Length: 400
Image (cartoon, rainbow, N blue to C red; front, side, top):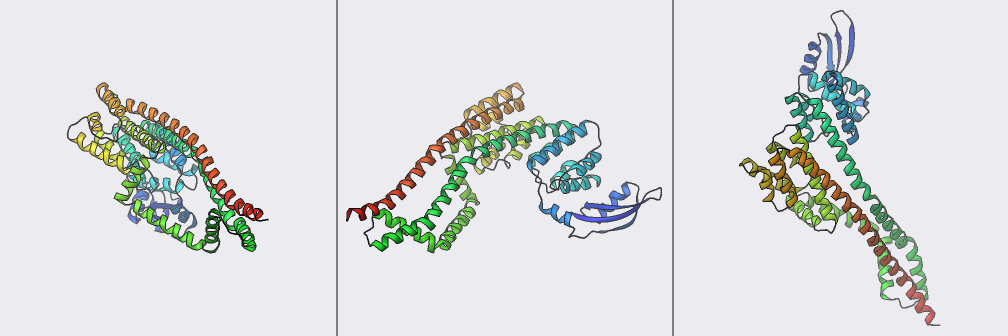
């Protein structure tokens, strides 16, 4: 997108100026002429304009996109023209969303559909979002589709916040343990070990291990950090490959509690997204191909794409799901009921609610299991430190 400044004269001779963010100069000229304006000057604006520069790097937050969607649904449902609704939202939006709406508005004024404008805006709108907007425009029910989309985004955001919120306490404790251990290794242990060396006492094994670790942390910390950073970089690069990603994900699914929680989260997103897409009138085959790329799981993405192949060959969705081992039997059974009753979107919405409640139960179980695990790890660490520090003192006192 490029920014163009312009000066125009209307039919009454009034002169005005402004800024347009469009693809090229031709599009800018078409937009101005379509309004019955005579162009007296049109040129590309300074690319280093501070607001435009900030807009290129700021991305809208999830709640901003949700609010934009809900407000659009309300305005369009009230009979307000699309262009006018976008102009109002642009004037009311914050720094993150305003440049995105400007791009969408420029595209729409240039003759583009809302779906195409949203897709090319660079605002982080998902393929599900674009597909639903396109379906709403085609069927003439854009306000209803935008309303459903806003509800789905709200539920998705609330569910993800619960999942992240449950992990805050364990993460804080984990980093606190690292900080305390680092302080002990760098500041406390060296003073104790220096005292033991002055006495010339024979040090037990745990104390020697503690001294070695402390010496490594004090004198070779840059080597330790380099090795850790290198290992993390290598692992990150490997996990992004097709084989590495599949291996990491399959290992993740085998972790007690967490693996099942991860599966339930994926199934929640799958059921909710398919339900919303079908409710918007999108064919089941298109819905499967769209959702396959939005779950963030290579295993389930491959499974859904395979299910789409079966559906394309005339197999029902329930039967297609049954052939894939990563999906539980209750999912195929409920989908079968939905196909028989003709209410597949409603059944899938209920399935999403079921898996969401299952996920919340597992989140509570996970946090309950993590707390004693943290206490055990802390107990082992503290016990090792006590033994490593007290045993030399005991040996020294027993010599007198």
